Image (cartoon, rainbow, N blue to C red; front, side, top):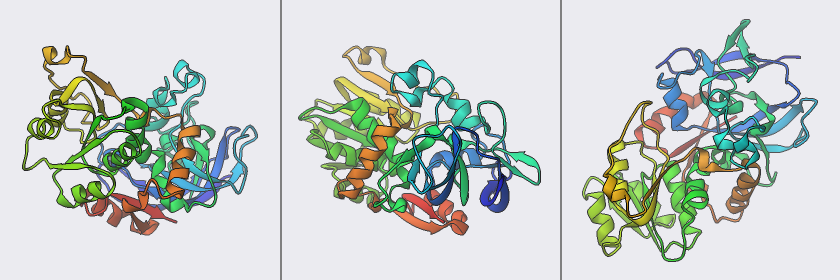
Length: 368
């Protein structure tokens, strides 16, 4: 039986999110129906809404959902009705990277999550008036009161933790934390620099503060965000409007440079400055995504000191182990995500988009 629900639909590139009645397809054997309690808003949603990514519109976005399982398909074993779940990206489960514990690098990641708008078999998960809509966004399309979710997007979580406080774990937070823990893996005495103090950057700051790095430098142009970064564990802050990155990092590190850098801004100019500010054998993690086709020039001889530049998707996390660990840290107060979150009623999604774009709210979370 199909389910009628209310979703925020983007009608065409650049159009606002408008609430509309939609119909969810019957759950397949490896799908579940989830009643959403909360959903984070992420820059990737706005990138698709603006037409920056080739996702089929009209469509339903949303990829930081959290809710309660209502029904499961015949083959679903990991969750049951009544379970609390955080929704994350989906993956095929069968390719080499999925088997190797790196589902964010699944062979079919792009069509399954970001640009396909449909299931792997080409069928549609959401329709309106009999016409298919773009859906299956990150295996969830969670800007809706109910969502049809891929089993591999579902992560069962502790029911004692409020879902509103952990919705952003599915994408933004997992990305920032994973950049530090899964790629940089700081060792005692390291210097970690975070470029951009938005939701992903501040998640990286919090992750670095939980580890052995002794110097954590947050860089941004917004004074309030730098102040918040300090409260969340940054030992130093740099106002990018006042200082050049290389000089600031050299001064703080006694000329050595940074051991690890997380680049979240998506600016190729900032990326280049970051690579130049690395210490010998330092690593820069590229998280921020500029428009498709963007290129950056690097000083080749500068790389010969063992510098590494590593691209990253979704923190290179194995979601079933990583997200529950983050939930435990939120529950214990050691990952204070509430400092980033501003909540909005689902109907106020337009205001949430506005506040995120203006920088007023770091991580808007819609509540249902």
